[in-house]
Image (cartoon, rainbow, N blue to C red; front, side, top):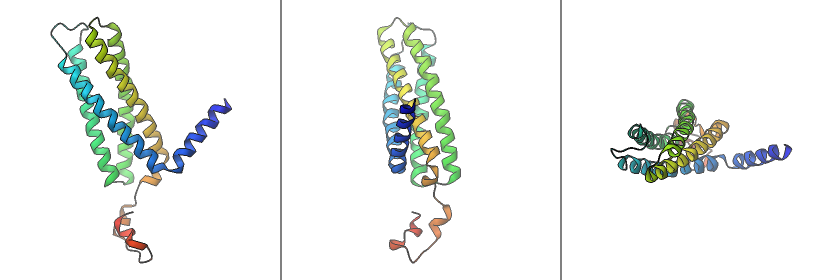
Length: 179
């Protein structure tokens, strides 16, 4: 038990050492997984035929495509927030959306893994297993990302009034650049 706690503290301290990089790397990983999930959802939607082995297959294909579209919008919105709008309000709203999306990923994982286990069509089974896997990966990465963002949000949030202040003692006028 102490080994697990020590390992958790070691990982936490490793992330705390460079919190910006930890948050950025998990965010970029989520964007990469989102792209793969979108491609898989498109393939699942294209592979649906009239003789669906599992009832509701077209509905699930729509759900996966809709979720992948929302993931892309989340990726775009999150990137905009991190680049331009790092206020406490926008980061808080974004954190809430990430937590909700994380929970949606675990629900979709369970739905698609069940569907993969109940279908007789081999191509549907393969794509459902792939979608379930990537939904599980997204659940893990969004959960880790939300944990990091929550714990290190003070290092991410900018003071909105800092962008208009001028401090002649700062080199290269960093305060006026909002850094």
